[in-house]
Image (cartoon, rainbow, N blue to C red; front, side, top):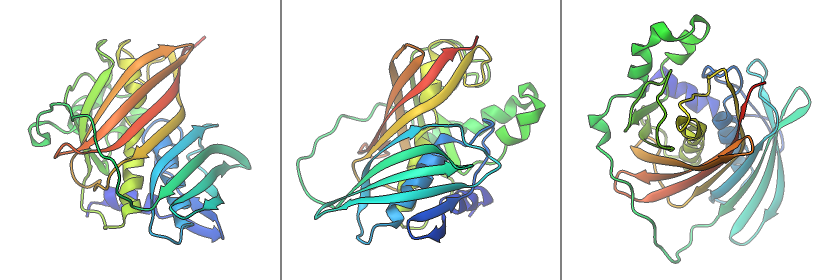
Length: 286
């Protein structure tokens, strides 16, 4: 197993401080603050740790309150709101420096049979025919500011294969859609929460960048201020995060200084396993 995947597993292995209280470490991905997908994934793990039954999450809804400090660990407080016959509900508050930086509502469900249907997966070339996104970034390393070059070109635990690759540093305006394959680089243990948390971690990638793509901007463009405001994720079916998954994101609207995007995640066989929705701050800097 690669060291970057080991680091991802360690990132999701929270330290127990007390009953219902956990502590997580941080990983710098070059944004200058804690990556939202990391907090989302760790909060999900904290919530799942408080369940005695082997139920998995079917939906999580989070609000980003303050930017996370990379230099300080994050403490997660879990409220056990309800344990019912087939559903359990948890509320998680992430704390740094005595202040809430994020909160999460999570619902867990016993496996049950019911109605089934889904939309079809979009057409996409197989991931083996596409170049890893990290190759595109490393090929442009001389254009990356020196202070973040090492972080942005570091090994990743996730292998992203964009279907429509472009200039990741200075993109041309394009349609508000983005399609990419992804998977964890090496085999993960079978624990379902590890796969759900890994997908939660990945689900925060490419969402706001899809909003910005229409305008030829990136999260590093100096003219705009960009930050995740909220993030929702629904799990529909079991899956493995270490097998190829297709992530299709589209942004139907940006208005009032906020951009909205939604995503669907499919297995290679075309099964829809998760849905994503996020609103983010996308306003011009003064």
